[in-house]
Image (cartoon, rainbow, N blue to C red; front, side):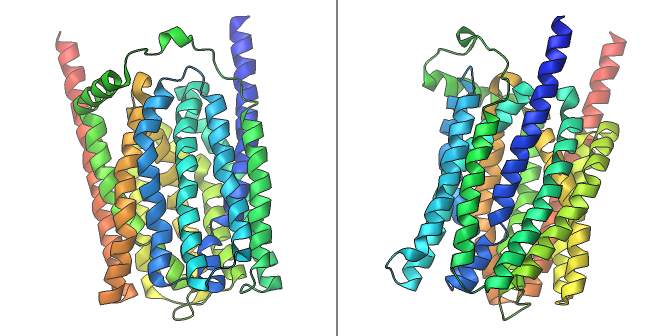
Length: 427
């Protein structure tokens, strides 16, 4: 009877988790692809401001990750905190919608938008950290690859439709007008409230509050840091992941500038949405495949495939400004985005001890968050002193080096596992 109840609870949580994911991806896809476009075409943001759109959120995220991790690890029930953080993050879309109504200079409004986008990452970082720790308790490890493969396929399909409709709305009303973007931000705010409400329907496993640490916070910090220093597998992985992420992140503002700026490709909102759609379509078609690959060869080697594939993306952009070829490039890139994002999440969970899961997730996020502060600025700086094509080439080479580092870690892990197994047999 107990097993049947556990099975029904798992099915319920998988269904609610998928619905919550749909609302999450709708709120995200309504805005993510069009935030840089709004900044460049409506607010006339400079290249420096576009770079800060990527860098500042990383800085604000780092400020809350570590204290947030200690707080979350001490929570017996994480659902309420997660839902509250999600709702707080989505509130910023409402403020973005109201921003063009402010009586400020265009330069001040552009900077205010950059700051709002950065501050939005405070609750969003806490929400993501808490959600990862929460969902790690809700979905058993053996089911995660299958459950998230299915969730990602469904949510990406919905995301594709959302992006297309948003792009059509903006292009039909004029992508230099403010009000279509304001309508999009208001819709994202409303959908975000639904996202938080549906998350609250997940059945959270009961955890006795007495089982959570009641020790002083400074003692928890010391114990967690000691645990981290002994986690050699995690530290090696985090170092390799950080190396890859620097190369990944340095091209983010370059893609936005290259696609939207009239100096380069000068895409309309429709073309920006099509780029996102082709990228997402490839992801939808391959999430299940990558889940199977991970089950067969492990998350470590699967992540190497994904990151190595992503190293080709900036190189392909540097080759052409033809819109149709860029669409095909994004179809190719989407295959490896799906692999990297899905497997990276499972890989971090795999290497994080259960008792300190939020802390270890936070430490990985801090490592890659530090690079996210400097990498976009570095990318724009390289573009300024050379050319955007050279910056793309450096990004590709850096990503490939990071993929090589991740391969070394995965092979080292396997050799270590075989050596330990051999000693066990000898005993």
